[in-house]
Length: 114
Length: 113
Image: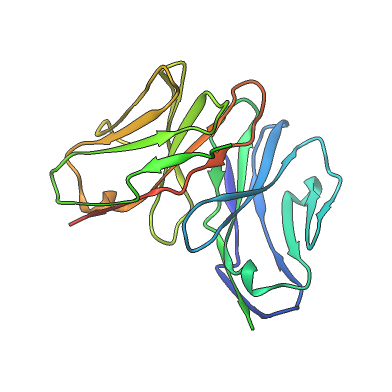
């Protein structure tokens, strides 16, 4: 069975602090994809990143970075120097190769306080 | 380049009624999936349409049905609405065999009274 766990239900940090959102996944497949999506109050899911299971290289995009570790089945997301506009619900998700069905975690609600 | 669009934005129905939600995929995409997101939860996969056929289905009752048209747009139909069907319904699209990144629309918020 596939499962995504986001243990942090809600996080509040003061603007400019760094914050890490945790994601742990479960799958028996060797080929799969991991995603992070952002959901602002408007409701639309905004795609942030996709990683395939063969690419454990960490990625940085501006203030965002992702740490993928297969050994611990984790795909954590760090926001550096957070801003109020980063306030949203963030979802980690898993998809088996060629399955096309995305399994989402329950999300982490992030509050960036001014 | 228009992204995924959905209509209507909001909808209020009463128990027992039927509802139809619509989705237009992002330009160049041919595959559509529907997800249900209850309040405070992550989206749950309902079903996927490709080449006008249902290809995969999640754990949803037959009251949930769909359709895909030749222009790749899609409809989600829910019959005999229950209070528990109140949720945000999200549509995602992508180009089969080319990309595995699904792009989501803004959703339709359905309230069942």
